[in-house]
Length: 312
Image (cartoon, rainbow, N blue to C red; front, side, top):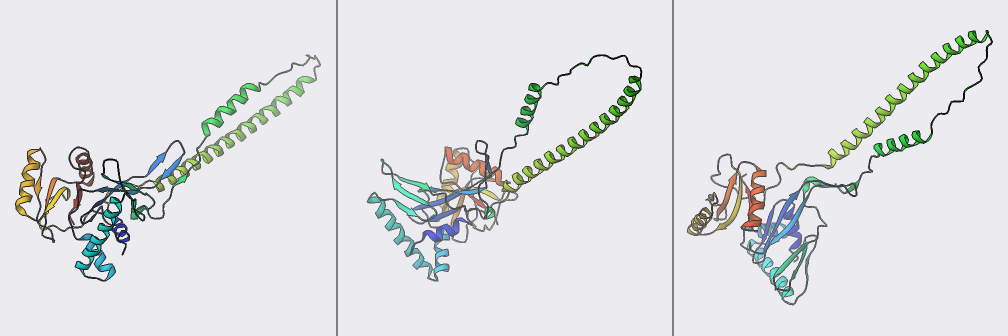
């Protein structure tokens, strides 16, 4: 049985999927982006990464396999162990391990495992059906400059006529002035209409472009939580927790809390989850943005395996 299809299914719903004895697949939501060089809009997406240090069984993958394949939980654990053993054997033979729609694994020169995401699948459910698209650049200023340049190159030349002294021409002149005034008023009126119509067209184009940008841009305020582990006693007004680890032993959990506090973190031990594990946090936060910023900082400076837990 190929368990990667079950891993891929869980990546749509969770931010962390752990494969016991192998590592954990993590996801991070990236907002919609615009490439100004190519005028290409990219929809929001979930980016997949891998952490080989997180290997403890949290029960998520095994329970999903047991339900989908209609087998027992222990049989699901065995299937996971068989798959992991096969992957490790292929890596020892210096082969590339490819997990469909997820990524590839290989060993570098130092013998460390390297993960390369395929990025062929967007695991963000809210972006389903969205794809990249290119919007033509609006060149209003360029066209305006070309028109001004043409006007400069085409000056109006007046040719004077020989002056005549016929008296009856003064009446014709009066008539011509009257007609000219009426014609000028008509021209001005026509120019005003053309200008108004041009502004209306430009405004409609701007509104259409803005509408397309708004439809292609997303701000994820409340993404799917990493692991849905209900807590017995959640921190008031701080439902977002950056998790350092989950321990079977309460003593080990308390020891980890003291070590993190000694490093300056506002660490604490949460109530045991339904699997009997004691989660230990780097810190708890009132908003998702605060927790996410803290988690990224911890990934760079302290622990690349830290993950986000959201109270239900």
